[in-house]
Image (cartoon, rainbow, N blue to C red):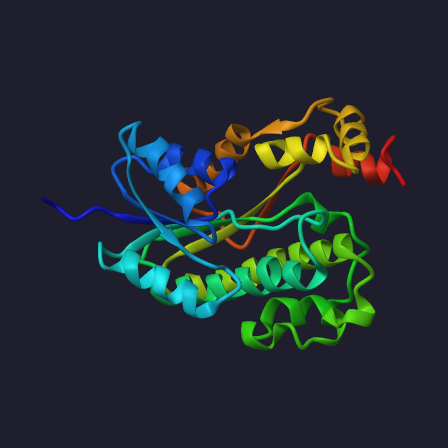
Length: 276
């Protein structure tokens, strides 16, 4: 049987699965998640719909785990697509965990995949509207987030406990870092003839989001989507619409970019009724 293109999906959630279903037909897909049962659930759903998906355990906060996940995927062929949809949210995790997973883990993953991605390959990482809300950093701070080797990232002064106010601030810093890393990695991936971009979703309805709507910050979220121009939360399939552009031939001239898809919530935050 002819070998297939290999796609790796990290994070077995609704957004990652929506993107994988949109672009993953005819490919060999490996889905990695810290909770193997989550990866198995996505694999089962997709395999029942005719895809070819293998679930694996993978912890984004561990470079060794990332490497073994990549190595398993490479056994099936050259990796041509990366979709990174791993993330922990401010109400789910500690400052330390957010920085280790969302900030360091994403940087380590982009480094590792960037070393092996096939020529003509492409990646997308899911960031967040949060990175667009925080005050601007200095050009020097942005450059440190973009270019510091991943193993040294968590030693940066701006990421030390005294400098991070709370889990939301940690999350915003992680997402700002994701955006800047994608720019720096696009330069490196370009040397292999590959592209990498990020998508920053706003409030997207997923099981996790429904927990948030019903949790202590629920009114905050409901107010956000009621007062954004779209007047509603988004769906994983709308994120997949953007990913499909970025991962396909129509996106061939797009690399090192971030796409905000939040129903206008960030616009409302700066210039409308969501202004703090």
